[in-house]
Image (cartoon, rainbow, N blue to C red; front, side):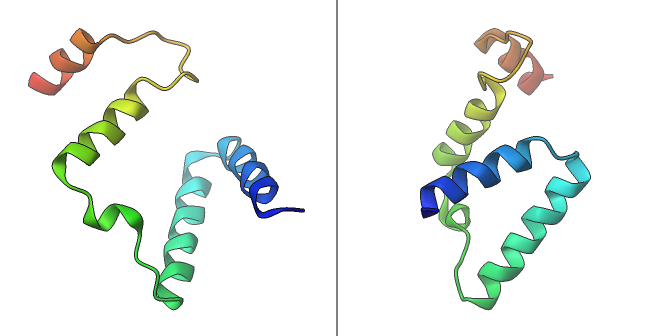
Length: 78
């Protein structure tokens, strides 16, 4: 199995897990990265990169509810 196939399979498995288990997987990934001296890519993100990430999460295609930029602005400014 190629690394890409493994990543895709892992992504699908993680998507089907409960939130508390996903957090444990994330914690384990950070543990392994720390052991190998690999810093998370997001450690050096600037405000613009974080904003892009958050908006990407907010407008994911997987959501059953449709959101608009105005919705995000109302929540953010509240």
